[in-house]
Every structure is written in structure tokens, then in C-alpha cells.
Length: 276
Image (tube, rainbow, N blue to C red; front, side):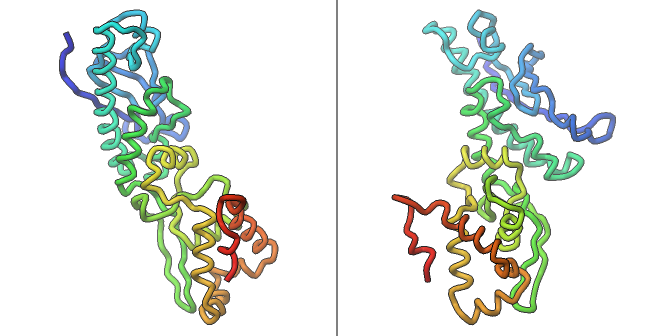
């Protein structure tokens, strides 16, 4: 019989002997304890502890000790799989609670803490994506854990600096990994609250919590430029500020136009968006 204790927890290795770990050792090996250590790895950058059902049989051993998919129709196997999959929900909840406080615990703050966010490419069992990563990222999307890049806003003769800050997903934009040159990226960072999140983490967020995301897209940039520069008087004033100085470069303007039009094509959108 199962112990019927739905306990699950996660632990991150953030320091040794009172010192923060070096950059190359922030990730643990992804051990699983049930509650004693198992000879398996999850691929998660944390240690998982839980009362998983690990009764030995060939199917369980073939999946590394924690069985998440039934290989036969036996009742005992189905019960084991159902229990282990249900327990993964508690793993995800514990993991979210850990990541919420982790920036204050690791050396290097928030940017360093992203090293403990899991990605699908590292998983040892594909099922963990559905059972742990999806509910985890859905929860993280609701929390102010996304670091924005610092930027200076300039309008006319006035300007103010916004330092890096932690915000929720809805308060900024996830910048595409294929944004283009450094000049285009810098232009986006000046005019938008852009999250400074590793590309692999951004990909997981877009995949697991798409409704909470505001990706930086050609359409978003088109609408922004049109809104800011349509009025002739405001356009003349804005183009004289440092925030819009890049538009004085013909190569940059051509690059900007190319990126703004990259999603326009047959069945995609209307080129009329570029006029007016």
C-alpha cells in the first residue's frame, strides 16, 4: 500500500561553506529522493524530494526509478503512475515557491537565479515537461520575477532613467532571440520595457504560458513607431531627441523597415500598416 503522504519538495544548491557557488557550479545534478536517493536524474537544476511510488519492477526501472507512464494494463502499475503524476503537481508548486525567493539567496541576484529555471532540453524524462514545467511556468508568469533592462526615456528636453526591475510578464516584452543587430536590439531596449531573460527561459515562457506573454514582434514595433511619429509636430520634436537619433542613419532605417515587414506576406497582414 502507498504511504499516502503527498509530500514533495525541491532544494537548490546555492552555496558551499557560506560562499556562493561559482558560475560553473550553480546547477545540481538533478537528484531524486523518495525519500532516499534514487539512482536517477531528472535533468532539473534542483533536487526533488517526494514520496514517489518506486516499487521495483521492470517498467519502473526502465524509466529510471520514478514511473510516469504505464507500460502495461496492470492495476498496480496504473495506481503507481497516477500517484507519481499527481505528486508532480506538488513538485511544481514547491519549485515555484523556491524560485520566488531565490533571487535574494543567490550571489548575483536575479540574473544568476535564472540558472535554476528548468528547460525542456535538459529533461531526462519527457513527461516532466507536461507535469512539472507547464504548471511551473504558468505560476511563474503571475509573479514579479522577470528582470527588465535598464533604459533612459527622453521626451523633449526631459529624461529619466529606469533601472533594472523585477516585473510581471504583462508589464514588459519578451525580446525575440532573432531580433537582429545590436543596433536594433538597443533601439527596442530604449523604447520598450524589455525583459533581460536568457533565450532558453524565454522560449519556455512563450511555450508554457503564451497567454501571459507580450512578445516583441514586428507588429508591436510597427504600431509603436506609427503611434509616436504620425503627428508631424510630435515627430519633429521626437526625432531631435537621443532616443530617436538612430533614425538618422539610413542603414539602420532600412534594417528597421526590413524587420517591421518580416511578418507581412500572403495571408499574414496588410502592407497598408506601413503607410500613413
